[in-house]
Image (cartoon, rainbow, N blue to C red; front, side, top):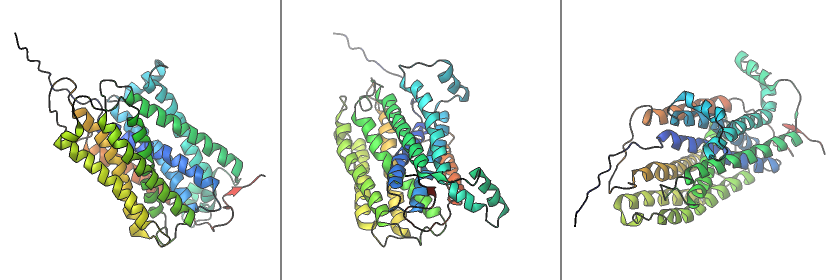
Length: 367
């Protein structure tokens, strides 16, 4: 009997941290689109500040996410190939059509909703803010019917993004932990954690937001979103982890730590949502909820996308991954968050105080 040893040379990972960032930001955008539509439908009960925070999260995520995707494509000129050589059987090719439409609708939704705030800026004493107010493109008021129509179209467009982003990873049959229904479902449900985290971030940036109380509807929406999202994720994580035929993740010390960290983050979200989101919630409670939600959503994507690639497909490995400090690692992560923060700071300055009426004076109504 002859013994033949097969050695496989280590290969670079296929999906860089840029992909994690894309899934993170674009996930927050399409989840925020759904939450914004809910808040808009109950406009008389939700607060303008939270609706503005949700619509800004939608627009900013839809702008920052595609930029992270171009970083993952390695070559800036590669993007045009998606349009020159359309392949309808490829989810990535379909995504190149879905993504620009969603980004355009997201920006249009934010512009339509914040037009009343832009009009109010035209009375500001600052010259720059008065110029920014001209972006309202006139004094006409956005009708509620138009606002609901555009927000609904944006939500359905967001669902197409959720479908294609999940499908393009789940189609990789070489990775059993991706090639299963639990993987895209896990990314979808945790996208709402990212949406809540980023929306609270924007909410806290809005002037006087900390002193302004969330309405009971706002608190209920946030609490139910976080708790339901985290609970579904807690159910999906063990289902996802069980679908690895090579070895049991629960018998590997490193993967046991990864799964325990995910579980702790999700449980922390649930506990904080029930303990801190109440009628007297102020800055500290919102900051804690914001941080826990963002960390949990990020960890899910990092573990399920980056750490999965360290599992050898043929050899025994291991192939550990170390985050580089350059553009393909920590610097790129910091840079994209810096861009998001800059846009959030700019967008938060556009939000003006509105008296809570039934419904908001932002929209005109045609019965």
